Image (cartoon, rainbow, N blue to C red; front, top):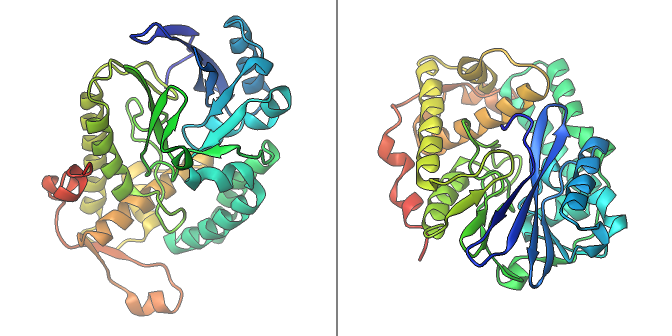
Amino acid sequence: MTDHPVPAVFETAGGTKVHRIPLQAFPNFWAFAYLVQAKAGNFLIDTGSGTDLSHEDLLSGLQQAGIQPSELSCILLTHAHIDHYGGLSKLKPLTDAKIGVHELDVQTVAHHDARLALIGRRLASYLAETGLAEETREQLLGIYRFTKAIYRSVPVDFTYESKDMQVGPFELVHLPGHCPGHVVMRLEDVLFCGDMVVDGVTPHLSPESINPYSGLDHYLTSLEKLKQWAVGARLILNGHDDPITDLSASIELTRQHIIRRMSRALQALHEPLTISEVCTAIYGGMSGYNQLLVMEKTGAYIEYLYEHAMIEVTNPEEVEQGSPARYRRLREIPDELILSKEHTNVIA
């Protein structure tokens, strides 16, 4: 995460200006929106979280670029996580810009309360399966529901697949895993990669039992697809960090980080453990929002390890009666599995 980032202006090979707008999405948590001033119009990529401070930063950034919200032609979302789409609620009344999102993220953006209720129920079920105490589970569910206080549903004007993944001057590719509808956008030699690659850590992941098209299998496949799709790109602009100039190296660092986390989980699983106990073994003690994030990410790791037959459930009778599953290691993680054929041959 970049500390106190500053605005910046980039240019594509063809001379199109790209303005990076820093937004304090939440206290001490920064995100970027990008204003692209193209011949086809003014395109805004992502909108921040929608908090008052984030919205003020967005309006200030647009003004510094010489643009009023009413002059926006189109708003494109890389994915439906609150720090990227939440700003729509406050921005929409100020502009007639058309809003685009991938099909798999439409429900979150356009029917937020219903989606929150549905995913919240799945999250509650997952947290019960982790073995966390009921009081802790309720606290984490409360944290999850906080978005209801800052976002109101905004209609979507078009979806990316319906446009054949081509919107104005942008070419798009669907890369699920971090978020079901995550896309990366290409404008000439510049990529807008959202949260596909995050400096120093892996992007947030959750098990598919909570949200289909999330999960580690999808994310690993998407990483390899991005690596191939991005050939020839000079500059990769992301949602939170400095520009990436060596995408292959960043992807490899991310992959190695995932391997280390799962290896740590397998080391702990020499004895039967619940997901909550595995989470503590990997990340130590956590609380608040960070605890929710690592509980979900641990679930994604456990889901992957179980589906790839590296761990087993040791208490099926107890699970049948409603107790949390306990997992135990069957074998160590083979490095080649992470880059198996299914993850490398992704472009037909």
